[in-house]
Length: 231
Image 1 (cartoon, rainbow, N blue to C red):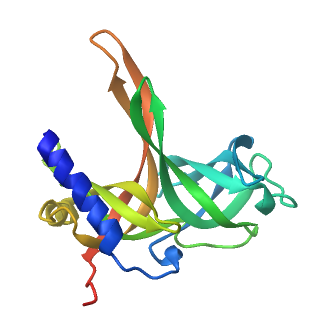
Image 2 (cartoon, one colour):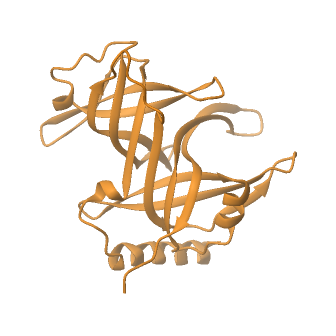
Image 3 (cartoon, one colour):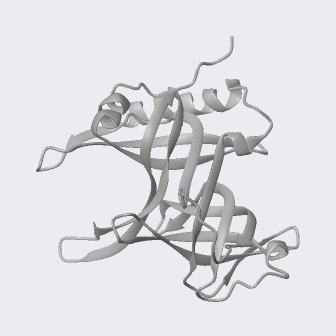
């Protein structure tokens, strides 16, 4: 396991060094979300004197249930913007990740980073209220499995380049024929993924007697393709 982990880390480093991508990083990681503000904004962090805040956005699915997605936004975008509870908004931005440490263990945190925000018009109809597109590389072998009812699933971790020599590591979940296709992709494979951002509750086993309910955020894949690398 340690040897395999080392190989994966070396490959990820090589991908970062060798991959030539457009300088417009929005082409690698772009999303649009339309939903309702469901929490008050809370201070998150400050970078070079610019404050950032977090809030939750509720986005309904066709099935009737909703995804609750964490949003990160700059103070500059909401200085003259009403971000009150219940406000319907349209967000454009990126799905980003960062690592935090709990009990000496690293944990991947996912959030939507806002580039633009506006109020949704009362009569405005947006056909796809939750859409994300990623271009990146597989950074660990996809995990393929079947549910007790025979449904095929594949878990994928995609590394997406960001400005300033950074990368976001985005968990994705594929179903059916997309899951079968994903299971054949080797680590380092260059992909384009399209889908929606979703929230999913799960139970984390802490020890033999204790469990904890948590929420995972990931991309539910609707389309996945190889990207042709330029010579």
